[in-house]
Image (cartoon, rainbow, N blue to C red; front, side):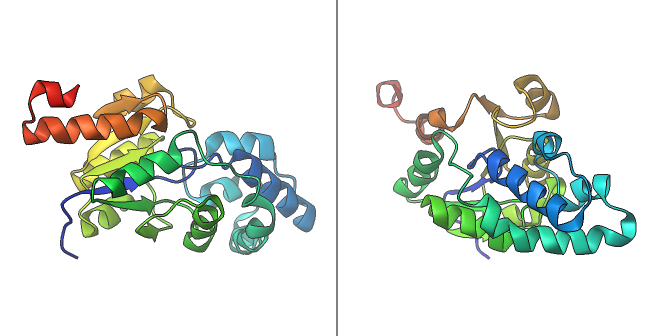
Length: 215
């Protein structure tokens, strides 16, 4: 795929959406359905890595695949409506498109469920690529010509760096600002509310616009 003049990648969980309430409900449903205890409150403090990593904490190895299948089956009924957009998420994605760019979502989440979240919240992405974590995200970022990748986890920082993209980190997930900075984030924002103004300034600086135009 040919690169685009401006393509920005976004992570999903705790970057664009606060999926903690929904994921907690989905884990509780999984626990009820299987009779296997899952500490859902603890599970949602570790969002970012692939589902399998969390499932292995609670289920024997020979039950992991079935537990993952059941979790994904239960997920739409329990997790979608209970997961709000993060502050500034819609505006951040819209800002990219208003600048003539493409906004893509690259996430470790199962792709059909990621698409359900975005549809429910009215967040319009130009592409959604699921089941990729950390450095593996670089493949999709490169294929779509992403110059920036926005995420909340040190794994997102690693993915951006592996792709040669600018890492824009938001301290809204399980990793704090110090961890994100230590991982090598190029830009650190408190949340997405400041992203549209930052992106506009960055592109203006890159184009060599007069200082008055960048204010």
